Each structure stands twice: as structure tokens, then as C-alpha cells.
Length: 413
Image (cartoon, rainbow, N blue to C red; front, side, top):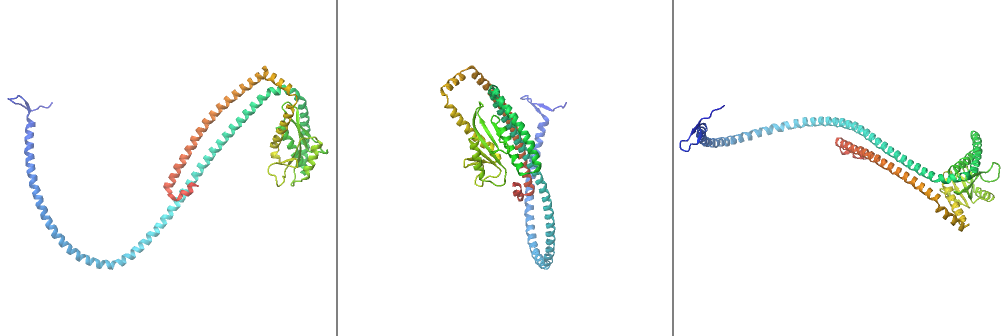
């Protein structure tokens, strides 16, 4: 614990610190003495500066005279040495230039090696981006396939009730089709044996067989009638039937697989169409007339290739069905109206419509859920693709920072 030296004023009884009072007086004395010394020193410094300035002026004048003499001597010596120095400098510059060329070549080689490495990295990034795009396309394809499957399932469900009522009517047709399939199987075996022989007739029969299989596959409710081998006529006849199983029209087909087109086929096919009492005739040929692109009609006969025959049959078949509907509609209008009114106002129709509505709502809900899931998945993949593109931009910026603007064209490619 420290003790303070204090003094009490006898008049006002105020207590003072004795040490502080003495210290303040000493500080004032020291400050006064220091200020006086400082003024004296300043005067001495000023006087000394004046003396030094005079000495400096004298020294500068003397130095100037000496420098002029020395410069004259140096100038003479310099002129003598300049030529020697120029020659040495020229040799040194030449050596430095060669060293610089070697250094730049080495730098160029290193830059080319780095550029190749960066190009390889960019190629890997492009491959990764292409792979992501292919995955996205595969997912889109799967989604479209699922939608088509759902539409097919809905269509199948909607037609089950009608098929159930009409099943008995189609039993006889089913047995006929089974027999045709059996005959077709035998024909296939025969064509397979002929295939080993490699004859032109066998190739034509293979195309006929393929045509019949395509027609049976795409139009299962129609009846396909074959023309026996050795008999006069075309290859096959498609009996078009409506949803109730009634015959609406007939289409006759002729298949040709040759390297040249023959116009006489048209006349023969028209005669076969009249003999078979068909409504339309279609010529399926491997070699088309030069003036026809796709498929077209010539002399009343439709001409097309194998890959276009199904689309053409769908179009002409729809026309046959429309004509048959119009013809049927004009028959017994009064009775049909009464039957339709009774059917549409009956309980059976209401139950079928209710079942169709329920199936539609269920499938629509499923499609909406799958759409939300796929959109969420696509959004995540878009973020990943954006990340790849961002990293690619950073990589390009790094390359430009290292190699300079000379690689701009290469990076843009």
C-alpha cells in the first residue's frame, strides 16, 4: 500500500498532494530552460547553415570547373572506347537473342502440351454432357412408352365390354383365323425351305408373307383371304369389317419384289379386282415408278412401298367404313332411332359410361403423379447439367488465363 505526502491549507482546509505540487514547479523550470536552449540552438543552426551554404557554393564552383575538365577528358576516352563497346554489345545482343528464341521455343512446347491436356479435359466434359443428354432422351422415351401403354390399356379396358358381348359372334371367325394361321405356318415353312435355294420367286413369296402378317397384325378384326398358288388373281384380299363384325368392303393386294416397275401390273390388278368383286386395289412394290414419291394412285390402283402400306390401308379402310356407315344409316332410320334412344336411356349404357369415367379418372390421376415425378427428376438433372456447364466455363477461363487470347477460336469449337 503506497503512502501519499499531503498538505492541508490552514485557511480553506483543502488537502493538496505535496509531490504533485513540487513536480509541477520542476516541470515549469525545466520547460523554461529547454525553450531558452532551443532558441539558442536554432540561432546557432541558422548561422551554421549560412556558413555551409557559402562553403557549398565555393565547392560547387570548383567542382564545376573540375567536371568540365574531366568531361572533356572522358569524352575523348569515350569516343575511343565506343567502337569497342558497340562491337561487344552487338555480340552480346546476338547471344541474348538466340537464348531468347530457345526459351520461347521451350515455352511454346510446354504451352502446346498444356493445351493438349486441356483439350482432352474438354473432350471428357463434352462426352459427359452428351451422356447426360442421352440419359435424358432415354427417360423421355420411357415416359412416352409408358403413356402409350396407358393409352393402350385404357383403350383395351373401354373395348372389353363390347368385346365380351361380341365374343360369341367372333368364335367362328377365330376358328377361321386359326386355320389360316395353320396354313400360314405351313406356308412359312415352305418359304423357309425356298429361302435356302435363293430363288427370286421365293423372295416374292417372302414379301407376300410379310404383307399378310402385317395386315393380320394391324387389322385383327378384319378377315384376310389368301389366293391359292396357281390360281388366277392377286396375292390376298382384306375383308373390311366394322365394330359389329359386318362386312363393309373388300381390298385386293398384289405384291411385287423386282428391280423394275411394269405398268402391265396395273391392268392385271384391275381385272383381278373386278373378278373378286373388290372395292379397292393396292399394289405393293419394291420398285416405284419414277414420278411417284411416297404413295399415289395410278389408273385406279393405289401404288406404295412395303413401309407405307399400313398407313395407306388405314386411310382407305376408314373411307370404306364411312361409306358403309352412311349406307347403313339410311336403312331403317326410324327403327334405329328408337333402338338407340332405348339403349342410351337404359341402365346398361349408364353403367358402362360410369365404368369408363372411373377408369379415365384413375388413369388420369396416375399420369399426373408420374408427370410430377418425372418433372422433379428432370429438374434435378437440369441442375446437374447447369453445374457441368458452369465448371466448363470456369475451365475455359482458366485455359484463356494460361494460354492467352490465341486459344479463343479453339475453345469456341
